Length: 185
Image (cartoon, rainbow, N blue to C red; front, side):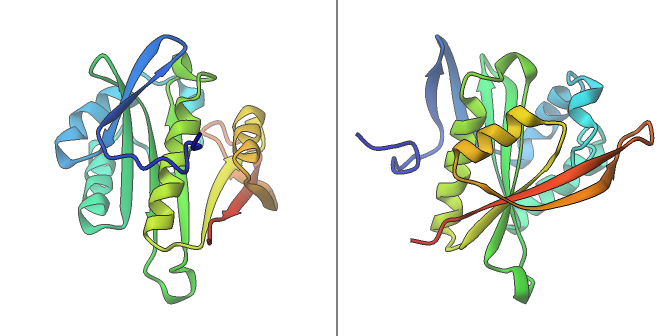
């Protein structure tokens, strides 16, 4: 039987997680309002360490511009037509990091622990391999042990710990963990 990374997915497609059907598809410019609606349902603790403040329309517009330019590929997870998560692959054309992609992901708290995030990350890694990237990285706050465990289970290894690197909206500092996976054949 093929693993999630070995299966070729064409988008859209659906998977069932603990009896809940979730559809996956590529994000487009038409999804701006859906992303904003999703972001505005998230609790503060989910927004604290996002690299972009996706509650702001201009930030989501920039995200869409990055998708249109090819710098970003985003998969949206939906349940009953509502966005419940996303995973993005960000790449750079800078000469010295052109072989590296960065994974960014967020899943609604009600859908966590079901495998939705794991499925999206596997899809993103497959896309990264198709783009001939050699390594993918993820940056997570050290106070997210379940997220770290999921990435470790997906063969990501810690590369760096940056002490007091992150600052939340209450000016408290947190450590940043950078993890990576080599995806070369």
